[in-house]
Image 1 (cartoon, rainbow, N blue to C red):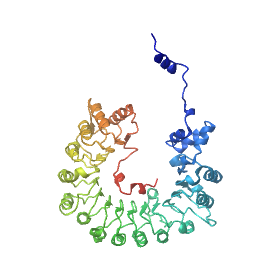
Image 2 (image 1 turned 45 degrees about the horizontal axis):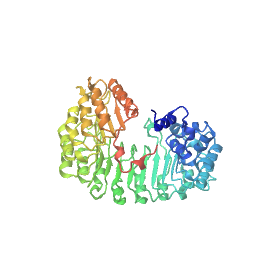
Image 3 (image 1 turned 180 degrees about the horizontal axis):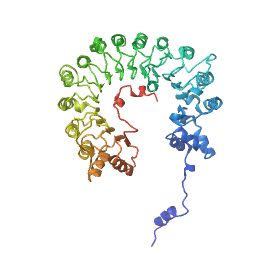
Image 4 (image 1 turned 90 degrees about the vertical axis):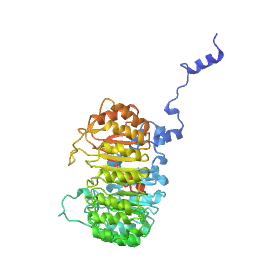
Length: 507
């Protein structure tokens, strides 16, 4: 005999049951769903119905906005449309905005100052400019900015614009000036000093972080100028500023007592200038001297004098030898090290690297030993048991790299060792090319181990080929399709471990 409760359940589950659709969700739930979507998609959803248009216009969805089409896909075609968006959609909720050259006018900047009172981060992209708008009528500028990024043009001089904003940016804590390093192809090309850093430094005394990236005219005098007024400086990045030689390093370290992070990749450092600086009196914790061609003597002097280094990128250094490693271990302080990248340092032996990793392996969070032909899977299998707390690992030789590695890499045993020893791994790059990697029928099992045991893994980069396709399909079947990427579109670095990583992001 049918029970009363069973009949009631049947009625609830029958065809007359009310259907729940997305239209019946509360507005606050829809708003939360929309918050996970890029602005380009939100703009499309606004065309669906009146309710979705209302949700799409909520200013809480528009706190961080990029109007650079090549970055966000959003393209505002005229100033009037942008002014309407500032008034109706952005308003006081806007905290971050990126503007392309065609939208940087005195009217827009003044409207942002009046209407967007919470605006603290701004990016102004002048990189493609051939002519600036007229800023003679600019009366005000957003005055609560804490972070400002200016993408410089090769030929447009910024001083007229900068004079108008000097009085409004003295609260800046983070400044990015992005140059045109990749656009310069000939050394004979005339170089213009398109922004006056010597004048700018007086307007920004509260800077904590300065990033001068790829600016071809920046030299030691510009670094000296910044250090003379920005004594609160904690992080200075001058990567790809080829004219910097380090002659003002001594002054910089004397003046900026709080400097913890100094990034000088691909600069023209001279060993005598580096050795003249008083490294032993600093609180420096992070150093990048990649591709600076320092001598062995200089590297020994530098590494043995820095009191408590936690982050070191010193790749592409022919002078980085076993002797440097020996002196550093014996006379320096390596116990605080959490990130180490020695890319392309072929003069370091497997034995010397093994000794260092056995000493500091448990404290390391990131290790990059790529482009070293003598470091194979046998070395990694032996060392991974010492790297149980690692979050980032970079290994292997890229395709067409010279000298070419001769032996095959048995990747299955390597993957199993990674899975069993590094449960907290977040980023992994294996650069050996498809011709070098050897895998077998049990490869799927090894990949399964990595996927199941390394649950925090968000990026695994592999060279194109059959093994890449095998790994990608494995993760895709588990709905983790975004994890596996190719070396042609993605590269892993240790920069995620920088103390000022979020402040240094500029694009």
